[in-house]
Image 1: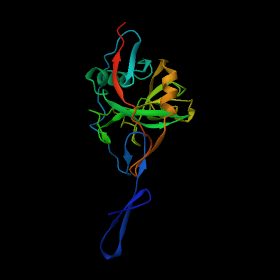
Image 2: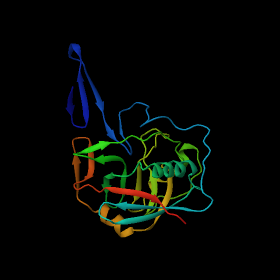
Image 3: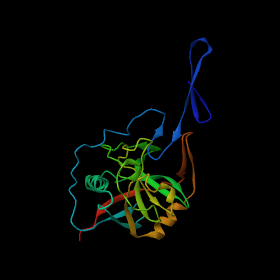
Image 4: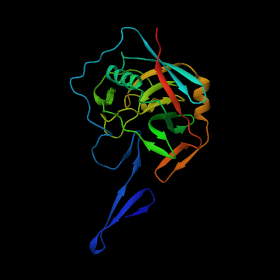
Length: 220
């Protein structure tokens, strides 16, 4: 087994070699197989959602905060799943592991403990976007929160990204489910941190960890 660029090469007998090309996607390294990040998409889902708009506050280790509102009218299962993860404390201590200025910041799947440690989502959910047969009209404009996923449309679990700038090419392909209402200055600061490679398989990783201390629901 050896590395060749962004591929793994397995040397077999009789001089035959098998090359596996790895591609970094929204949630995991997609290797050409049909698989989920964790669990399976839910079936016969009935969302239990509040009647009024739900807001959440992201608080970071440095004390900075951003506030967002969630839109169950656009993505009910996605919002319900996110709220469940927030209530369980799943996101506490996780970091933003992928940051691209002028595009987006991504987190919700890694913890920094002497290096990046993967944290799997409890389950996967249905991809609530038009290319997957779901009517979600929320555009990927600056400040919108959307779910990361692998190549499989129903592979989103816990990882999300926040748009640093408009990205219309993502519309209808990813499940937008909320938008920032406050803290755009914090978003800008995160988007402009210094980044680099982590190992040979992850790019755009902040040099200094950007850690979410907690995400909390706002009590109205």
